[in-house]
Length: 113
Image (cartoon, rainbow, N blue to C red; front, side, top):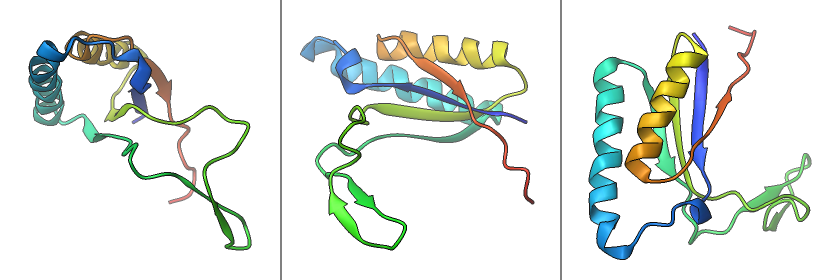
């Protein structure tokens, strides 16, 4: 069954300070619903206080990510769903809870066992 990534960048969440507690409750409620429905795989947010590390094929590493790529931050949810329509419906529930638009992508399945 396909896995879908539902995500948003940190800058997309424009919520007044006095609403953040309720947004957190609403977002956690949707995640609990996904768990109860058996579609939950993973959810979380990028720890923006810990900088990325770029690791080369030879094992060497440098601080920071790809210099040409946009910064990766925000919240992510991975759900396993039968159809794209189901994924859109869950993304809409998350968008409503988080008070911001969500980007939906499907993971390509690994053909190896």
